[in-house]
Image 1 (cartoon, rainbow, N blue to C red):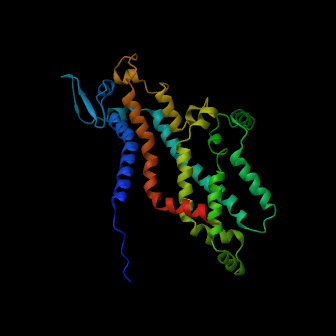
Image 2: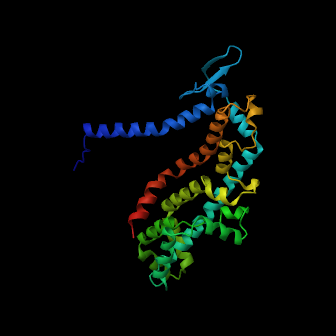
Image 3: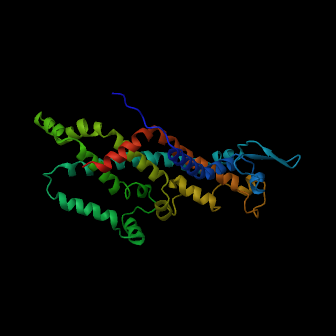
Length: 304
């Protein structure tokens, strides 16, 4: 029997055109930001930059299409910014590993039907997903635990996501019980069943959750802003970027660009370069995990 694919109709092409238009609208700000980061400061100040980089010729006082890396050079030469970048990369790897471990250790026991207090444990876990104490009680708690201005405050409080745990638990429920039972008959204990059966079969959902945790930590901002008020050496990249945009960075824009500090947009080129510098690394990670992304989310969401 020959299976023929359905021919594309006009409505299909309309949907494709709409999707392409939406994608274009979404990436236009990023393209403009990239163009600003590759343009000279004078071109940005004079609103000469749209979607192509523009440079300024000081000799002829003219603007032309071109690329300059001066903004990136200023960002890379700032030791505080580069130190924050490396610290955030290390922090992201640490938090991803710890969070995945905590998620696995929380989800796996809940797949056993004979676990005592399973219903109460599930209720308490889900309760924390919808209700929290609030910002002030959390700050007091961190203060009493001695975590204020401590790098551990970026790791411990958010090391487990209930939402991600539910996805992983649902995925574990989708694994046939016969596999576990056959392993237990052969003498395997729960730890062996987890490492030899469950984890190898859970590569798609684990890669997806790793991406969730990594992106969440890389983009983390609020916890550092609240709890690291006097610890500049442990500031993550997003908080450093916020400080740059609010003119509280270690880069002296007025000195670097030889432009008077009264010019309100003198640092826009450096700001754009810093944003690209902080955004691109986490975007590079996505293509490596993209093939697991859709399968991991959908399977973990519908099974069980």
